[in-house]
Image (cartoon, rainbow, N blue to C red):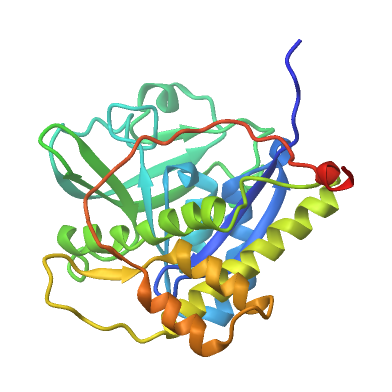
Length: 298
């Protein structure tokens, strides 16, 4: 019999320019719904942040979220599955090449022959499915968007959908904007492995919430401190940045009162690592059980 384990799902709204968390939502894994969490966080933070561009990965490729962003006039860039995969673009009879097209889908609950014959035009949703912008008494809801497809290697493509105008945001700019999201991948890696969010010490859900919030606060604090330390440029082959892992260790020493501010800054400046763009690694995903404090009683 398989051994069970508990999971929580962390949804994060992340400011990629200032490298800090704007909001987080935590759900149990069984109830996790990334697009719904995104709607809740955007509604809470829209007025606070004013004009912004919402950037999301393929887990947010949902008609409900696209309609929400469109109705609320929120600019967005969402990575979607390629035309050969089972996604929004897969039924639209698009050519296997780079493109920048204005497209649309008519979302309906009808089961007519017209709807069945033209999957490139219609999306049928069931009556028990939630789609807030198509009341039961209405026949359809038209959703328009811009689709961009470009090469990332000789034989692979990236697909983005957006409501940004093509004359102001050509494909080259779209690539740069979506690349800004890479900061969230780096921050999650640091939050999980450097700060230690992969391991919990309790099993009660409230204790897990406490650990998640505490480590997220610690991550933000460490980023603010490291960003405030002035860097010194050197004439070397690579550009260098502060070693965040070493900085976190020393910031913990500072918070515990073991070193003063001057020594903290000197230690952060001492440990540098080269910036090597373009490297990639295979992600090793596995379940993680709680690391209990029972050893302390020994």
